[in-house]
Image (cartoon, rainbow, N blue to C red; front, top):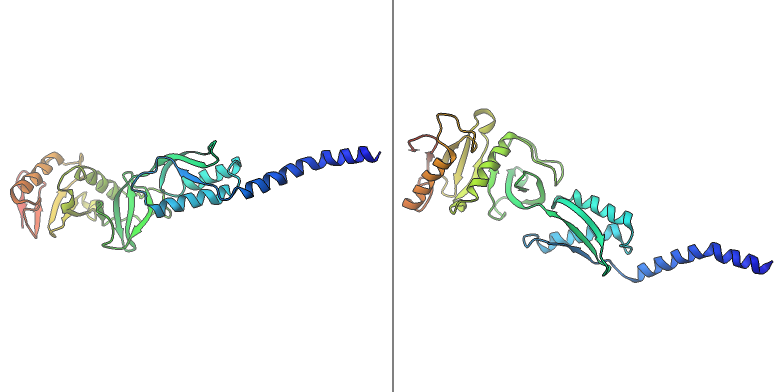
Length: 254
């Protein structure tokens, strides 16, 4: 009878013993190594470390825990640096790999709290710069809508959309670094955009590209005007410190 009791006790204790052994084994393995697959060069070391710590905190020392991997995926989807996360998986090597599509920094939206980085689609990224410290991205000033409450959310507003559409075509020009900012403050009431050059000149651009009125020349024609000034004067503002108007057939200067 004692032998039977001992056998039954071992049967019931076996799962618990295996669970404890697994836990000790995981703890002995040390911190999990996290790899951001296809990490882009522009994502700095500090930002990458934030993401890897986030994943490691969720997976702990048990990277094989499926629920933990799902929690890590959910947090990454809301971190702002990814536009989509397809998988957080444990590789055969034991490391945790994050597979997803990174959001690409494209422009800065300026408000009283600083210069906020966004992607081409207007999604807020988790990076804000003090005035004058940001890298050379297109800067959008004069937006009316408030900043999104968290990274990953889209910064709404027709004025921001118009400014982004102009920023996309300016970004393709060799003289893009001569643009200090795209001013969208008049867009809500007048449907007009302005460029501010690094020389302090205001260029009245007009409607968003593709939305021109019959009285206004097309965006390609406006670009040709600026290209001409750049070729003949070395700058798109023709060294003007006042203003240029490129909206009609005749460019006006003040």
